[in-house]
Structures are given as structure tokens and as C-alpha cells.
Length: 252
Image 1 (cartoon, rainbow, N blue to C red):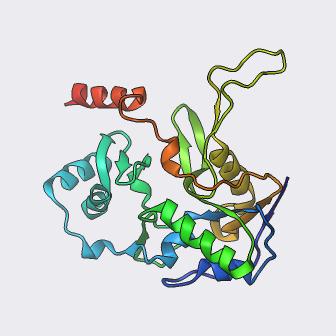
Image 2 (image 1 turned 135 degrees about the vertical axis):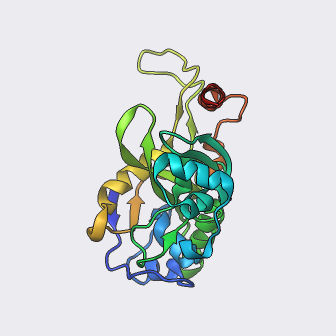
């Protein structure tokens, strides 16, 4: 496996064609996995907004008081969330597309002063559009992973995770195969897309020295379909969400 950054990616603005920007700066081979930071995808899709354009409601004001946050920012989070899982001491939500994260993934870094940036509306669709653009540009068959950084429930620190995919299954199911001792594996599901995102994040970096596009070569993981939704547990299966909801009721 060979992992490398695509250098000299310019500052992305609304309407930019990320596929062509990538193809103009590097060679592409069949089965490459193109890993792209969600920030530049969101910028190209015009997902920036200003707090001054938002009017906060009563619920936003109540949550804002708990955190010392701007109520307009909290309203922006609520506007993008299907459910509040925890509103204090952290502000954890499930976004409209099923992603669970702090403050709906809204960020004010890597964007012009006075603006904030959202996650893409549909990161699977974003990955598909970029992937098809690269394939049309180069004639090569590729996979795409859109990434974001996320915290972990029981550990300090953030890591890169997948929030959208194209032509790659985010989960590899090893059930039925044998381990080193000949035992048949009953339940082993490997989060391949997150593993790739984490590796890419090491090269992407953070801050003003970051590089938002990484290519992973040599994995041979391309598929005919795939969706990030394969990674999300159903409400019936997700015991952590159930526990958080119970905790919220106790807090009330």
C-alpha cells in the first residue's frame, strides 16, 4: 500500500470542481482510493454561513446558556440535527443524515473570518460526484472517501473518520472466514473506510500546514456500490443512543 498527499491544492471556493483540481495535480491509477477532507467539499458546495443571518429560538437560548455559546450558533446546530442526544456538558447531536457528532460538525476553522462551515448535506452524493468526475477526467476507476475528524467515546483525542463514500463498502465482514488457529469467525466487521480515513488524516495534518487530499494506492477495494449508511446502527441496535436518551430523561 502506498499513501501520499496531493500537493498544491489551492484555497477552495464555492463552485470549484474538486475532481479537476485533483486530476490536474497528480496521476490517477485504477483502484486508487481518493480521500478528501470534508472542509473543501463543503466549501466547493457553498456550505458557509454567517451567524448574523440566524435568529435563535427559545430552545437554542436555553442550551446556549448552559454552554456559554452564542444562541445563534446553537440554533444553527439545531437546524441541522434530527435529534439532540446530549445537550450538556457536551452538545452531541445526530445530524439529518445520521452522523453523530459534536455540534453537528459545524466549524469556524479554515474559513473566512465571520463565517462558519457545515458538513456536506449528503457526503455519499458528494463522494459520488467527485468520483465520477475523476473517472470521466482520467478514464480510471476509483473510489472516494470524504472524511471529517471526530472524537471517541472512551478515549481522548480526535481521529479521521469516513462520512461519505463512493464505490467502496465502508465495512468488511469477515464472518464465516477462519482465523490463524482455524476457528470460524462469528462476528468480525472491520471498519475499512474509517481505517483508511485515519491513515489519510496522519498525512493531511491540521492547522495551516494541512493537505486536504490523500491518495491510497494498492488496496484493491473498489466495489460497484457502497454507502456510509452501512456503518450506522439502527435505533433498535444502538444501545449507546438508548443509554444517552435515558440519561437525558433522568437529567430532565
